[in-house]
Amino acid sequence: MIAHAQNSRQNASPFALAQRAFEQLSEAQRKQIQDGLVWSGDYKGAVDGEFGPMTMRAIQAYEARGGDRRDGILAPRDISALSKEASRRKAAVEFRILSEPRAGVRIGVPAKFMQRRNNKEGAIFRAADRSLILRTFTVPESRQTLRDLFGVLTKPVRGRRIPYKVLRDGFLVVTAQSRARFSYTRVARVTGADGASILRGYTFSVSQSLRRERAHQIGILTIAISNSFDPSPAANGKSGTNVKTATNKPEREIQAKPVQNAEVMVATALAVAADTYVTIIPAGQCNSVRIGKAPARLLASDKASGLALFSAPVGGGVPGTYRFTPAPAPGPAYALFAELPFSGANPQISLARGSMEKGPGPLPRVRVITPASATGGVILTGNGDLAGFVARVSLAGKKVAGPMPRLSLSLISPSKISAFVTGAGLKASPFNARQAKGPAPKVNPDTAKSAAAVSSGYVQALSPVWCRK
Image (cartoon, rainbow, N blue to C red):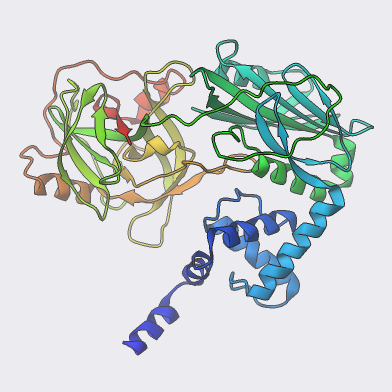
């Protein structure tokens, strides 16, 4: 048995060994490492305590500067040295996490260089020469929706270009660049104490001259500020450090509260027969499940893969035979999934473009920008063949520092889905089910044309999965 364990360690990949070592640390230690790597300039991701390729590469880059070892595993003395280095760098710019009650957020500020002033919607932290400006703000969504704000931020303006933009249900990130300035804007939707939706965000703006002169330091600050941003500090149980402001009038902070026993959209379901859907959802995590607008009854589940078969009188169905490939080759790929639109409460079917890449196992992985609701959505090859389902995806509570990266998603093969469905006693083939009558779900108008080109009828077979926890 000892020999078997030794062989297992010897056969494990360097990534797996580094991941195992990282996950043996406490959550606080894991976040401490990632935060230290942000301040060392090696890490541009979210400080979430989760190990992935970005964390691995960052640790290796840090190791390479200290010697020849690049195994991705930090010894206790290395962790201590990294933490001390981060503390020194924070102290050098007097980086502080401050409560900003006007905008209702907490955010990190390099206080050494910036003075604070209040405005109607939040606060402005500004360097004396205006080379650095950090503005926080809050806007009721009844006045301006997230999508409208995205339109304003990305509107074509002469002399300005938008290097990066992403808009998802619940948040946006936009970077803008002109000859004079570079800016990074991040906005999140939260629920206020009165139940109304509120947009809370910030813009970090830097003069191009300072950015060219201190590119490395500005990059670190941009990522550190993004990781520090908390649009719902009250809901997360954080009490910030109050600081003196230029205006001494007391302001009432708009409290954000978590919604108890809330129903949230967690996945996408595919119709495999009349009023029968297969999806991927963690067993035992929902007190009740709804597919579309209908209550769902669990017929079968598989804990290993997360596959679940539900009966739900939705009224939709499958428009025809699904083409699928057991071994999709690397190349273009598409993800079709249910997603809440940017305004309104009814889900739509959205499409995201991505690429199929070789994975560690027999199935490839897909790189694509998707929300957590993409779980259970279908992945299609460039010619419209079904390559599999999106396996479990969880973005709950995650922050993405910098532009939102594409996720590397694992797949559940069509053959496994078929075996699960037929094993549950369903007579109809999951890839040749009869068409049922009923209205098709709405398609996101921004992607309808692209979806129609590759979907091969999948749009009408997909429905959102709601979970009440």
